Image (cartoon, rainbow, N blue to C red; front, side, top):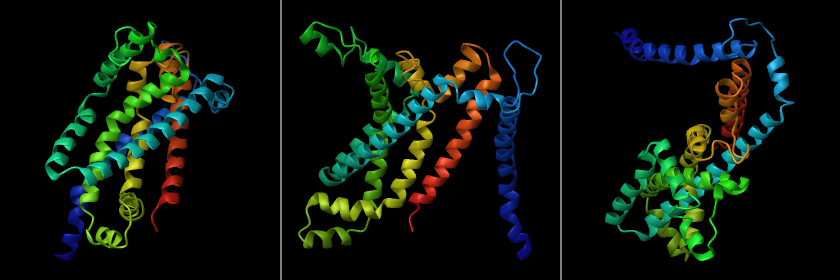
Length: 289
């Protein structure tokens, strides 16, 4: 009876894990195999070039630019999202009544429920240099249109703003719910010691939430790697290639410009390996003791 009980979890979990393993392993192996070839769209003749595609990447200035943009995008969106989440969560916990917390939570969840492409089109029209709701006051005052997407730095910051708007408010709701689960005794003790409000949250509340906040940051790191649709709709990598991330460049090389499937696959494999190594290192470095 005991042996039958211990095997029961494996019976239920095993098939699902097997399916997930196959779905993850087969595309990965196939992508690695393609990256070692010279396959192109519309051509049936392929050969093995082994690591030639990977060597070529490091002499490709456009690839190096896409890596730089991806790193800047990752740092910018993750740090800004977490900062906004902590700020909004603590403000709602400190200033809002329980009823208003519920109302604000419902409103802050709406952005993340919107399809990313729909949100991108709405914001792209809002930032339109002639008719945009956000840029119109500048045009009305100065008489000149404000084209935020024409400047490389402002274009990236504008798209990052939309990403932070969509996820920062939602994460703020999560931070609020985490604060509501904390025991009240540490807060009362800090106030008895005449701690200021910001000190209560900075030195008492947030350190108690270190582990879940780190987990939220990792979720946002993974999500920021999947911002292809948002950037593509709003800027298409422009102006020039100033907002072209690594996945956008791989897509362009594989399906839009030259049809170099193997070259694009080598970028995808390199991105997968680099992300896995980086996330593993960061997780071990930030893992609570």
